[in-house]
Length: 104
Image 1 (spheres, rainbow, N blue to C red):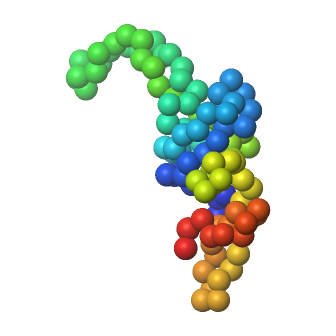
Image 2 (cartoon, rainbow, N blue to C red):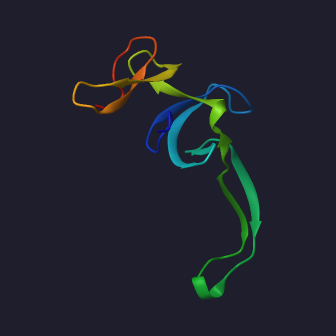
């Protein structure tokens, strides 16, 4: 069970995009892709069969998962994540500071 999941709002805590907030688009092993964060330019070759033009394309590059924190919407700050087992046996993520469930 990952602490950061697709669709979560996160805060970048280190690197060139420190302090910026965004939504997680993809999670792959120990890296995440965050919307409009870590934009890089790639020179791509066109593919006429797939109707893709060539040129310089801007897209999001991945960030290591340790460089982002889950954003608490109530406080507007990045917070640590823990786990709690509910009475019916479900395991949910909770904020360590307040103990409130992130997803019930």
